Length: 94
Image 1 (cartoon, helix red, strand yellow):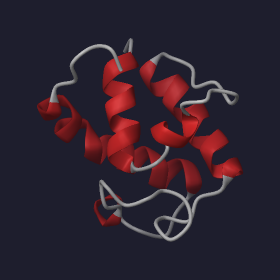
Image 2 (cartoon, rainbow, N blue to C red):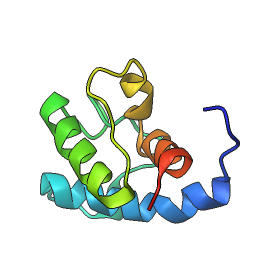
Image 3 (cartoon, rainbow, N blue to C red):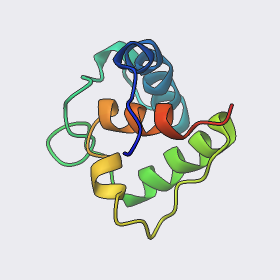
């Protein structure tokens, strides 16, 4: 990411992004239970590629930018709730 990201903006947006994930995937947990730095895949939240597509669609609608399914950055972007939120803060138009 070429521009500096406000950590205050990231911290403020973390709960909202966690809520989006819980709602989009109909998860049986509270948004606060998603650790900001825990992996979203595998041993962390346990998401799969279909879940990522669902999240990407919701983010696109909510924040006004598109996440490309073929982006080389997706592994980094979806590595954790914090990484995803930092990406949203740096790209959002809404």
